[in-house]
Image (cartoon, rainbow, N blue to C red; front, side, top):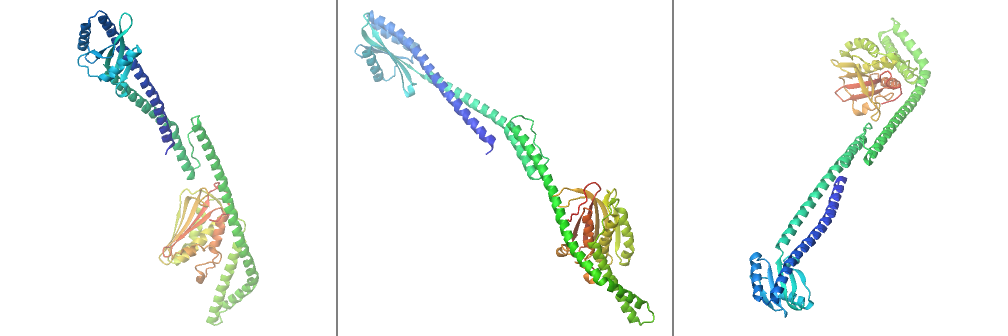
Amino acid sequence: MRISTKLGLGLTLTSAVILGSYGFSQLQKEERELRTATEQASRLLATALQVAMESALRDGQVADVGKMLESLELKDPSVDVFVFDARGSLVARSLGSSRSLPLIEADAGRVLRAHGGMARFGGDGGLEHLSIVLPLRDDSGASVGALAVVEPLDNLRQDLESTRLSALLSTLTLIVGISAVGWLLMLLYIQRPLERLVGAMRAVRGGDFSTTVSAEREDEVGAVAHAFNAMVKELGEARGRLTEEVEARIALEAGLQRVDKLATVGQLSAGLAHEIGSPLLILGGRAQALAARAELPEDVRRNANILVEQSERIARTVRQLLDLSRRKPTRREVLDVSAPVRAVVELLEHEARKRDVRLTFEGGASLPNVLADGDGVQQVALNLLTNALRATPRGGTVRLALDAARFRMAPTLPERSGVCLSVEDTGAGMDAEHVARIFEPFFSTWADQGGTGLGLAVVKSIVAEHGGTLRVSSRPGEGSLFQVYLPAEGDVEAKEVVA
């Protein structure tokens, strides 16, 4: 249940209790006042009749008593008058009186014994009739009888019912009015500010730390809004620091992994260069010499050429290992990547025509400059295009494109602006298992065709040195897409981060 609902119900119940109690007390007071006024009016009538009848009895004009009762009956037939003698016996009564005589006689007997008058409200709730009984005395003050005047209380009941209805309507109106005003005030000053605060909390929970709540009021709700805004600001700053720490940790972990891999590859390449470099040089030289001697049989020269080709292949593998493990420091400069990439495309156009593959280049307009090593960018483009041409069958297409882009190094890190170099082919594609391993040194899907598994490892190393990231998407039979993201100049410090 909403807090505004709880407070509204509490205000309504409190108003009902207070106003109900006040209304009840006012009704009681009104009833007492009406009874008093009615009793006073009835006593005046009874006193007047008492004086008149005492005079008639003193003068011996008993017949005048009957005439007074008849005259009273004509003027107010609702009032009943009873006259009793000194023994309490009824001697006269008004015409048409219908009151219970035994009760009146009992009241007259009590008055005669007590020698004083009395008033009694009778009937249901004391609201049916009012009995005024007064003693009749002679000149000496001795009691000679009693006079009873019984007046109906219909008007009193109607007045009380009208007063109760009016009080009830007034009370209900006040309760409704107070409740409505209370609910409106709680809606404006409690419920809506809390709803805005809850909405802001949900936004912050969703990651939006720029959310604030209007805190124009200087009350408790305003204090909560100020405290919330301060908390969100601190959370945003904490998240920024955490993001920087995560980024630094990712960079450190990636760097350590890369250093570990390069150390292993370096030991291996150094050993290979030392152990097979010299023998391989001698073997290659002798094979070239044999292949150059025209007097030798054709099969001998053909085998010598095979030896030359395989020696060169081994030498290239050793050079790639040395390039991967002992990369020279990059010389970065503000660079438009279109120029070095276009040069690589022009270099490989002849190779594409030989393979009957359509090679296209799309250079985006208004590309941001990057802080990069031109030779490294060329090597990245060269390795990716070489692999794409090798994977694409005749009649296929290889597309290289440059576009301005925004990217994240990791899902939790902020966006950066930069350049996207994408190479897309229509080759055989790769499954998810191969995609997960293609950047590992010595892993190649073209091992049976001379692939060393070092080209993409070098690409990843260069991209990481430039603070960029590399993404791959591929499916068997649908080709592959390699996307290299390099940060724009001034957007980010160069960090060795591997995506």
